Image 1 (cartoon, rainbow, N blue to C red):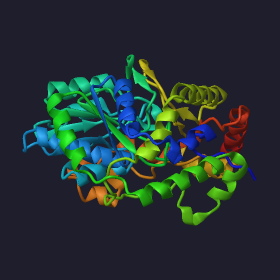
Image 2 (image 1 turned 135 degrees about the horizontal axis):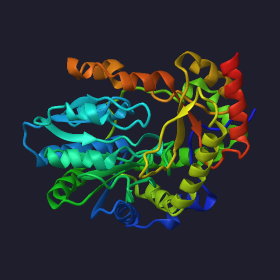
Image 3 (image 1 turned 180 degrees about the vertical axis):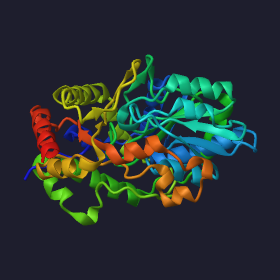
Image 4 (image 1 turned 90 degrees about the horizontal axis):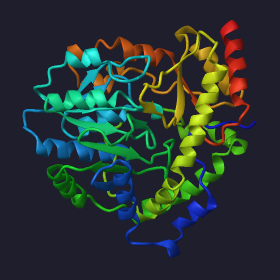
Length: 400
């Protein structure tokens, strides 16, 4: 049976051909870094082995630029587990701020109640390509002498108030890991402008070991396989293999931190040329789902903030918690890659719980999201008739 992957980016042969050594160019990585810096309206860009490694490197640079008494990093209480892991790996302490279930952005009222005196940085999430209230977060950070890290790992191509996501605050990051807007299965980028911060990032980046040739060769082979297996006609075979661990969310803080492969950078730079096209397809598919479910009162799409333009790596919805398992089972049985995304609020993740204080354990908004969220695929392999099918499947599951 065909199966529509939960997320992904189709890669063309012309883009895969950039893996061939005859296309090798010493400056491919530098060109990609400059391209992403221009995209974010920043002065400089750096490429790192993964998005979470990029976050760790950047937070360490923040730490080197700031008062040593500032050790706290405010992060959303519902986001990828790699965010608190990156904070801890940087030698800093995560502080949780609850989220607004309607938008997945930080609860700004809760943010105002956090003491900023020991706060080094605040981190956005922009989950599923939907921008947070970035202007408001930036203003809070500036007013309190706090650095802001605009995490655009899932939001390359999104914007807020006419500015690119990744371009708010002191610095931003992007990710090219699997499931992102453009992908080489791994890779990340830092973008920044401040001279002092750029100097610190330079020092950190220059000290990183290069990507190992054997690892690059293995990743390139996986990328070729990914390009063939993402299609719905064959993805059903992939998702049926339990040892691949697809969709699993774990807390991991022992990841390698190296430079990004120049070989993979050639593919990523080629994919970036199609970013506007890919974003347009995802947005169109997301809007079709939203329209098809508009009168299903039990289904609540996560709201896009009024001044935001989404990149929609996936479409997030809230459904009744007591019916979510039934809805997901029905969708997946029909060959549709719907997911429950991150299974817990960060305050309920044991590894994170060990890092936070009692004041960060009551996160009702994040817990509501964790119990109710599902995501739907929006990538270019999503069939045009899928919104109609999804609507009927959800209605049947709700009525069962």
